Image (tube, rainbow, N blue to C red; front, side, top):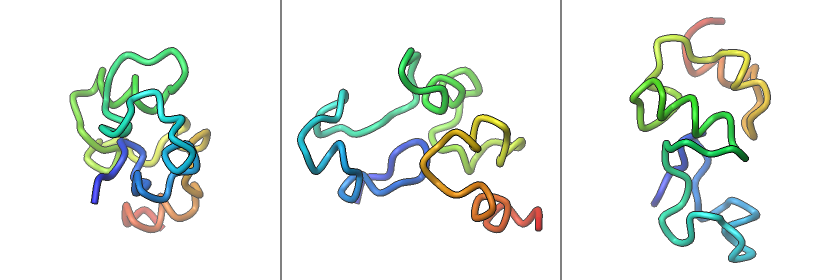
Length: 78
């Protein structure tokens, strides 16, 4: 299973299911991306997944597709 930089399984992403993913079958990877702050941030920090960042969860995470409270839970910060 491919996992996007934000943590969502690519196979469950609505854009992937509609064959509208801008990255095609590769899914979302960390890269400079004017449409995705999460992808750009991960690229700039040198992590493959948001969860690998020492600042996770952060304000950028709040804009992402995963519930911020859940991000706090899995990071052990609540």
